[in-house]
Length: 176
Image (tube, rainbow, N blue to C red; front, side):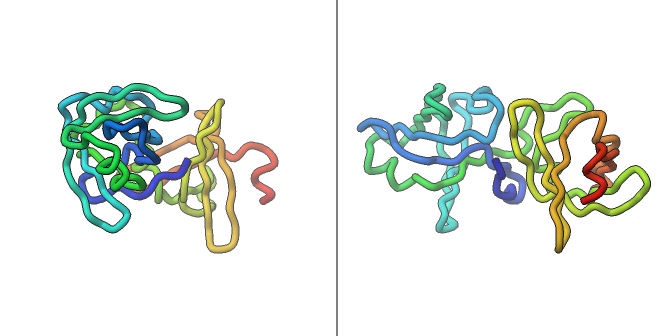
């Protein structure tokens, strides 16, 4: 699923999609791979579609259906929770866990210029599609789009500092 761009020094880790029950519990769609990032006591920024944003402390979180249920300190009834539906959940980038070498956050990859190993420009990485087997990179130019599997055998080099990705396209993709 595509995620909006991070704001300044924050990254979006979820979206409030509804309310659950009468006590202000929020239904959220997760952009994070696990619930570990939603530690109770951590301050999270709730950024509403109108541009306003407030900080809330996480009370608790638990998995629910295809997302999660989240309780925020200070949100104690359904009416309060309804005003937050549609808002993005953000944390400071500094609070993200360190990744092992060769693993990247999506926000670091979006916008990279993508070239073949023989230096042919394919476009920029516009978005990432999450699939069961592997992610798929959506690479676009003004007039075309190419879907590139995020596999070690295909993605040869990622240089975050230079904002470049080099790929070895599988047979059949080069014709597009």
